[in-house]
Amino acid sequence: MLSDVAGLLACPTCGSAFELREFQPPASALRCASGHSFDIARQGYVNLLPGGAKPGTADTAEMVEARHAFLSAGHFAPLARLIGDLAVSAAPAAGCVLDAGAGTGYYLRAVLDRRPAPDSAGLAMDISARALRRAARAHPRIGAVVWDLWQPFPVRSETVSLILVLKRDGALVVVTPAQGHLAELMQSVGLLMVDERKQDRLAATLGSHFTEGHRAEHEISLSLSHADAAALAAMGPAASHVPPEELHRRVAALPEPVTVTAAFRVGIYQPTLMSG
Ligand SMILES: C[S@@+](CC[C@H](N)C(=O)[O-])C[C@H]1O[C@@H](n2cnc3c(N)ncnc32)[C@H](O)[C@@H]1O
Ligand SMILES: [Zn+2]
Image (cartoon, rainbow, N blue to C red; front, side):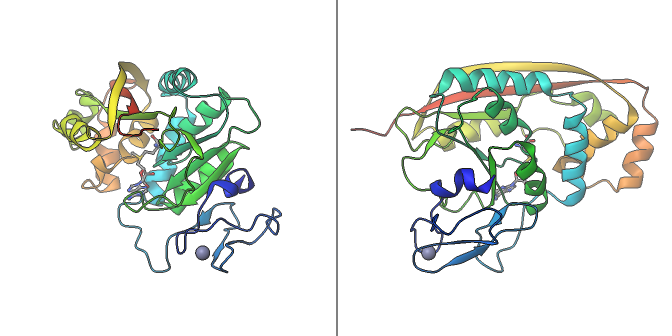
């Protein structure tokens, strides 16, 4: 619930903490000491973006529902288990786990399931309010916050143990699609391929602040119904250039079940620049 993470958040307008004395769920707003107020949606998430901010790259309602349907079918459960295992070994068992771009909260839930401590909360951040409707319900200890990850995070210092490294013993877990990810589906349905330079760009972005400590390649061979394959194609931006009816027509022409390889690269990074 939002109350699990409200104490970690900072007002994006003035940086002060939120008034927790008045924050009794189900409260209708988070209020800071200077009086800035942010409405809490009926579905349990709070939007901390300034009014009028554009959702831009947010996943659409269709993408979110396709992602929810696909993940709920369990196809990526092995990846969720791997991330849960890595999270246990990478960071202290208590404290907050921040999922930056949490989507429906599927992986954050898996991490929290491996961190039973009552004070291990999950902060799901995403710019898609629609995704956070799902994330807010994905686990009792998840609090969901609409935010643009390109802006400084509205989080108080020394509060996050895993993913966003604000504690010295924290860690950052990054999962990226690897070469060959969904290749069969890409070819037969005409989706955009994984950017070959994604890994180089990631290394360049993180390199000055983080050192990669552990890396794992992970492949899952999926055997999918047409409905699952259509949901998998529709849950990412790769299909944004294919109209839904055309996508379903192309999927219907595939064998059923259709075999698709999901390929991921998981990197665990530790901070290099933090001292003292
Ligand atoms: C590929 S999805 C991954 C979702 C989730 N991590 C998962 O694997 O199921 C990327 C997510 O990033 C979100 N996103 C895109 N641009 C963003 C931004 N600037 N700030 C915050 N979230 C963003 C999208 O709304 C989407 O939910
Ligand atoms: Zn404020």
